[in-house]
Length: 165
Image (cartoon, rainbow, N blue to C red; front, top):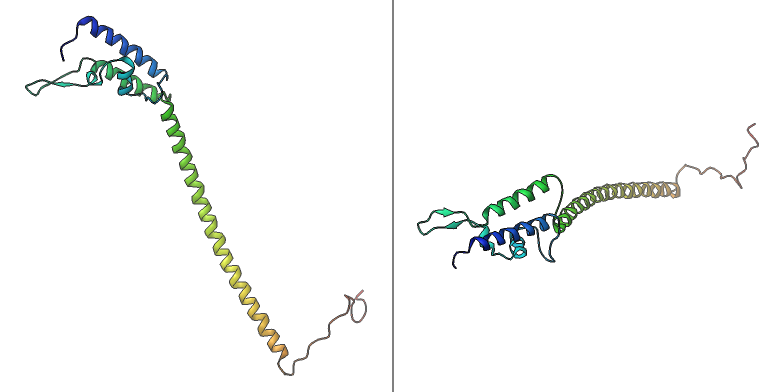
């Protein structure tokens, strides 16, 4: 690929700056992100122009638009540090991460509550079983022949020998 003329380079740089401003304002194309790939597509230049090049002797030289790529990344980082999220997908990802963390916390709390209720149920069932066993033992003791007499039961809720007043 041949070299481009100064006028073509200036026109490309203007297109890159315009695309950069649009992307950083949040005007992303459908399916695009706020990154160098989308910047290249929106400005109509190849993405390789944003990266350093290698000479034949192995040394590196800056790409023709590398300074604009660095400026784009700096501006994007400054916006992110200011708390502004330009990419709606990134905002959605952050929102979903927060929601997942909240749901994990809720599940953990529910698991703890469920474990407490299971322990309580186990304790209650064992207490009921012990009480039932005691009632059965007392009924058997009452039914067995012995010198123990059962006291008479009261009728209809009245006192057997008059009032206590």
